[in-house]
Image 1 (cartoon, rainbow, N blue to C red):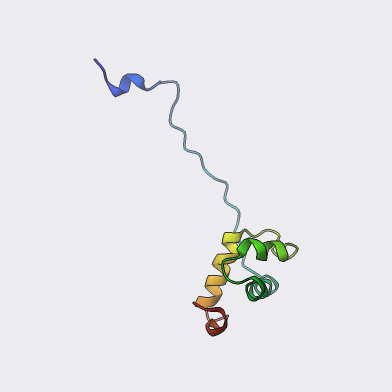
Image 2: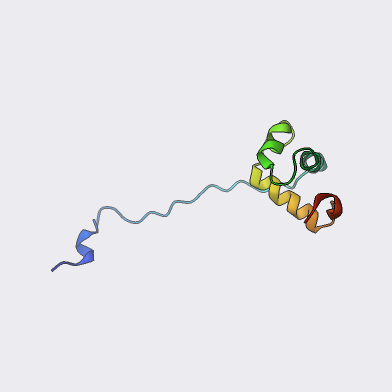
Length: 86
């Protein structure tokens, strides 16, 4: 019979690949200030430009990390939303 089970090789089990997760580090005041200055200089959404401009400070941060920190600062009223939008 034609069964889907016949096409599965018993020698190739399903292997779940896990990513190694780095320990989270809180953003420092210096990093947060660099992000604020970067947004003032380049605008929101320019996370790669901000990272490149402040690469010595944001050395272990990704663009997504920077964006998330910025959004968190907005939500925590650490940044004036009138100046930096929603």
